[in-house]
Length: 237
Figure 1 (cartoon, one colour):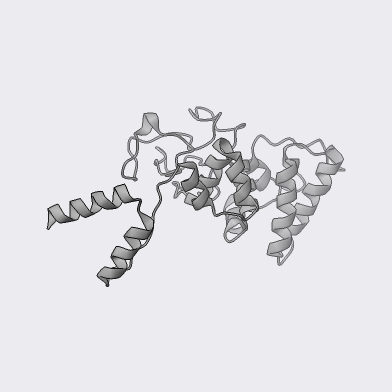
Figure 2 (figure 1 turned 90 degrees about the vertical axis):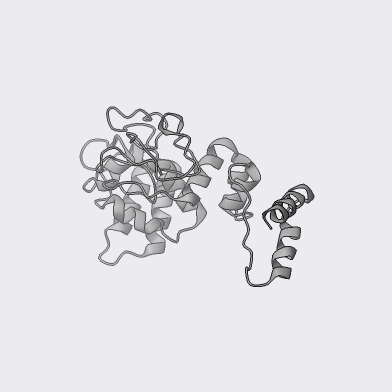
């Protein structure tokens, strides 16, 4: 198994360290490493067996002990990738092991320390905030340099969060059936999150024609909600 892992890791190292890396080949090679979790333990032909404490350690490690690149670079490869790659990379970056000392959420991944406030309106509060919250990494790290495990976050900056990654993460944890449908391309991450009840349904209304506004509301709202909206609009008038 360790030898098989080295073969996968070696392919990824070669793909990422070409003078002009092929984006598709690099993603494909890394995906195989992620799916097999080959980065966690492998035996290169020279030196000791490699067992990095975290995915970030492996990414930044020198050859053959790592990809010899940066997390920021890996984040760039995630941009525009398919759902399977994004989900696998996000799972690896959650870091259930090897998280920084003092991390209250080390066993769950997420932000290593919490600040006293959240940028997002409606946040349940720091003490009640769930690392799998659909707002995802919106709570500010107390230290600007605090490590954050998020595919579209950054390991040396405050988290920006990513709604798609958050949806995949929560679906993976709580609704594996819908998670599988997303990875199979049957439904979008957002639609699956709505179906699971993790997000409210939203829709867009064209605002320049009253008849189109009315038609959209009739089509999108159930009769009870539509009646309530009509009543509220009448009262405001």
